Length: 181
Image (cartoon, one colour):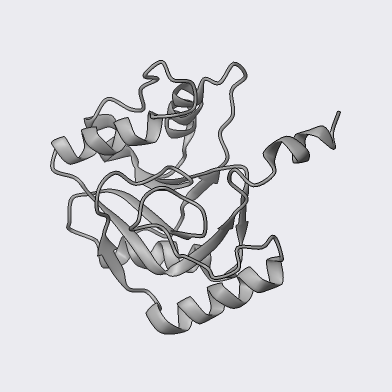
């Protein structure tokens, strides 16, 4: 029975994402850890309870990764296309509410390799595949490599169909960073 999830946004200078993820997993005080991108906005206040519920629903199954829906991402299983993909958070909160009311705590298998904006994973699966690996592409590919190795060891990845997060991903990134110069 899981009653606690360690939540973190790992970072390591020099674009060493795999190193930062592995450090987060090694230092996690719990079996389950939620690794997040820095540019996410939680639009559903039930996200933590939903994450615990997903783990409970999948108890006894070989689970490597649980993820959510978002507005900007490459994997179609995780993508929730929004008609007007603005930066208005109230708009995205309304989308999250609508999606939750339709899908609640439904889970489905991820098709392909999930993108790593929301990685709810466990120490057992992480250790079994040898952790995260820096494949020499900086930030890109660490998540896909992890997903492939999980699948090769028989672990499944699931998406919480009713959990939507706004992802700032690739939206005026340069403009955002210029504000802090």
